[in-house]
Amino acid sequence: MTALLAIVLSGMGTYFSRAVFIIALANRRIPSHLRLAMEYVGPSVMAALVVTMLISPAGDLMLGVAEGLALLTAGLVAWRSRNHLLTIVLAMAVFWGVRALLG
Image 1 (cartoon, rainbow, N blue to C red):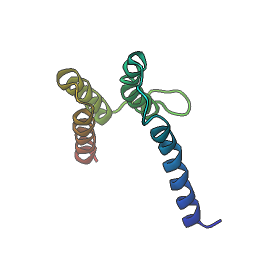
Image 2: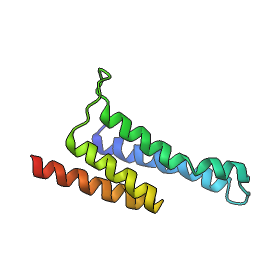
Image 3: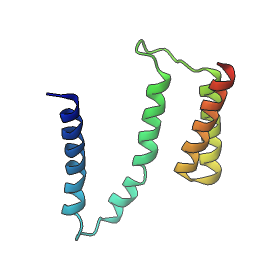
Image 4: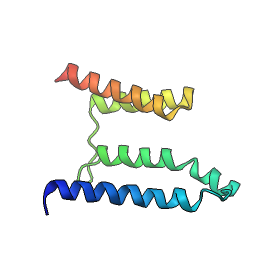
């Protein structure tokens, strides 16, 4: 199998696995308790991504200056703005900026 075919098949599989839920639930109301629970999916996924970035395969904490300042920025922006996108953008800008300055 060529790399292009693998990429195309992966993209189609991802698209169809998401489209099934949209099509299946298009004419149904989502219960309020489920909607409430779904509000926590984004922050949970973000926390999981951050933790996997900060923990080495051996289980050690790898927290440098750039990571620490980005986490602090993310915490403050999320607390003050309650905006996930703004939190991600500003924290990544701080992370990349500090890494570029420190080399």
